[in-house]
Image 1 (tube, rainbow, N blue to C red):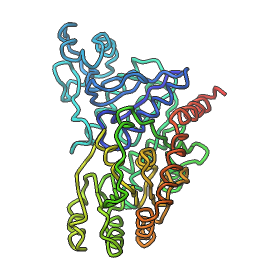
Image 2 (cartoon, one colour):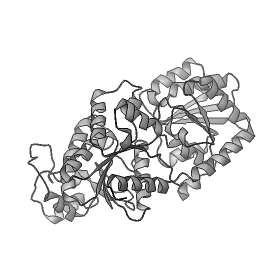
Image 3 (tube, rainbow, N blue to C red):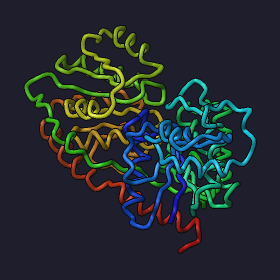
Length: 422
């Protein structure tokens, strides 16, 4: 089975959970043994792991004809793809796009990540998808998140092949119901045109059915998983804070959806009971400055640290240095970070309003708004060694069973159902 997959980010260039999930799903599908994935990315850098998917750099796919020789093409894009692929795609240009802003190879450039002209890049990506869909042979289309839905729809229109979309989040979650009409429209269009909708949790599935008015019969839950720790990250020693100050960590985007203010308010309550704890809010976002001021207003700035955005090994060093990991999200479609924390042996507290709460048992769950319960949970883990050890050991065992291979097997089954191959 060949899958034409559209993604927006991929490790090691991680901007959020989407890259981690995309990589895990690619690995899980590869593990099935009979699935070949063609993964389209707007701007790969050449250092991506290509073990599990053939990566198509969309910024190297021409949409306007240019008569360029092999050596020149090789010099320009050889680190990203075989120059012969450039010519193969050039043979499938389907319209005159010379009016578009293209480079000397007839390709469109992408900024990478989430630039200010994101909607323009989403549209450009979908134009290129038309070339790729004409040039490749595949059985089914898989589009990750709203950024790639237009590309998935275009590929379906060109090929007549069924479209699966993967809902990693919705604007309804990101905005607490105050949706951006443009984003909502793109999301709904993707869902309306999809033959199969995969959602990362039952929470998200319910949102898709009720807020986007989708037929429940085509909407399925596909929970995320966690990738085993690399040898390098496994070797990072855990900090022993038994007789030292405890460290409680929030790690993620500092934005409304993630509930950072509840973390600060709970920290304030804990610090009225003990001063032997330091709180870390790692990440960046539109509420970071507000949280720094809030910590100062509460008189706990001397107990708070804001180290900024972390990536790669830094994340695992932070988690292994922590005694408690807290994810107080207001609305979290899934949330892979608690699984990573538990994997590192860090006792974890999550909000009941998160998708991962549906599959995790050996952690403490509280309502995001209940700062009293959150404060009690933080205090208890920091001061009860038996509770700390139980959550640490049982949490590790639990997440070891939550693998991408199992996710891949379920997605394969959904592909087969969508294709009527069963």
